[in-house]
Image 1 (cartoon, rainbow, N blue to C red):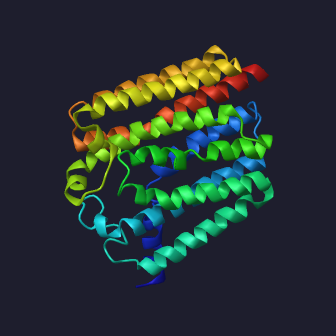
Image 2 (cartoon, rainbow, N blue to C red):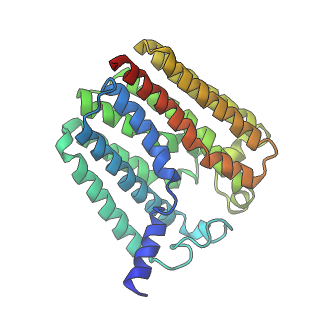
Image 3 (cartoon, rainbow, N blue to C red):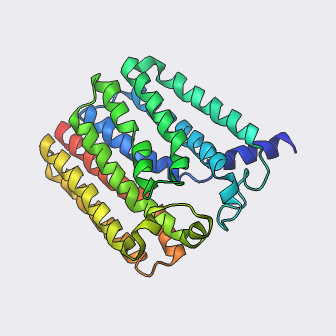
Length: 289
């Protein structure tokens, strides 16, 4: 195997060819960065967190594929992943994950003791999430904590503490993650039932679409509560309104539970996150004029 071929397999193992995961981590981090800085982000901290999102998502994907390497070979959508297909060895995967985790740790060193301490929690969450699918009925909730941990870390970096607002935002991200990752899990439900993996799509059963709708509503309600506490302007709520319309569109897409449409709805969630961020950023931009 040539070096170029090996690097290509590493790229696929880290999912750098599929940026949706990066975006789903990045949007809640940006929500927190703009809210915690009152619309005036510290650009160095922002860049550290943005790079950190890419690095930690890559590490999480490697760990996920290492944990699921025996399962992935039996799922049509994942059987060609580098580890499942034998193109990358388990040892290589562990070394790659370790290198990425070390890089992420080096990134947060300038941000203070609290952020460094929280980074260990973030690493634990990323490393342990894949194993929750063995025993936890709704592992997507755990995923939401892992994907949203940039929120309390952002407040810690900018405020030196983690206020209640940060935990409300994290809670919003958890229920959003349950919504979008249930759409994702609906794609593989038949295969997951065969191999014994637990997912929210299986747990919710015939109530899956209703549960997704409730989770979107809870996400928007929590974000509205944060906005009310912050005395945000109408443009913030307009962003939430756009996000609500996008959520309704997703419910239309998944109404027949067609796997292709469910996957399409999952991918489209980046626009939900973008709409929320747009409302936050525009709110502070208009206030500064």
